[in-house]
Image 1 (spheres, rainbow, N blue to C red):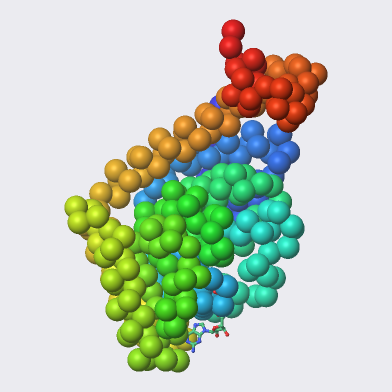
Image 2 (image 1 turned 30 degrees about the vertical axis):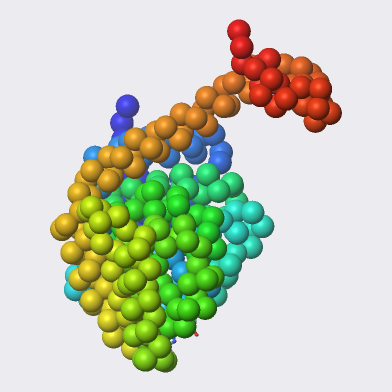
Length: 314
Ligand code: GDP
């Protein structure tokens, strides 16, 4: 089978080809899906050579400002940066927390950068799959840094942490209040915490950094391969942004990123397998029997476990 026609321009770094390839991978049409899978397998050998960074934080913490500052810092240094967004609210409602405002206007026009908003439509699992594919496509097109942004409301963070090399949590200088708002689960995912807007409240930012450091220490087992760090920055002035990148590079040096990726891939395979197994199983179910059983479980005539056993015991 010959390569998909988009493969060659994509590998040559064409932004247009990259945009079209991602659009193809987001399509739910069966023929597009088949084409997208062919394209992905054509280019996969050329992917995998980027640093993949997940970023999150509550709306208003300064994610787009920070990503633009970091992205410009990297692009100016010759990196090719891709920014992908994951916004499960766009999957559910068709609207989005990130909104339609033009985010990152300066990074958008930088020739070394590529920015892609969250795919609308589809369920959360679908969004995760498309984001993974978009990472592969960006890498194949020569992007050596992929930043994956999530909205920080606790739905997509685990999924994004499962497809990136490290995870960055942005917080605000009033960390006391802030820490209560941040779900403990998100703190546990963080390899770096950055107190943003340090310019607006320098003293509070130092306090917040200290508190975060203590919280991260408590959460991290002492034999962990990496001790999560707390840093301060201002996305607005750019202060502290190069230091965040330096910490990312330390992480990549110290942690077995290749091992983490292998584990992620295996996990992803298991997840897809579970989904496929469920689809197959459901296709073979007797709908009438299923409805009757569900009604019996609802009415308390059968326990849920007994109901499932009727369908799965041969
Ligand atoms: P997002 O919702 O997390 O993407 O947040 P935005 O990047 O849209 O930023 C929200 C607001 O905070 C905007 O008005 C930004 O200009 C402002 N902002 C972002 N970073 C900083 C910063 O480091 N210092 C100050 N003073 N304001 C900032």
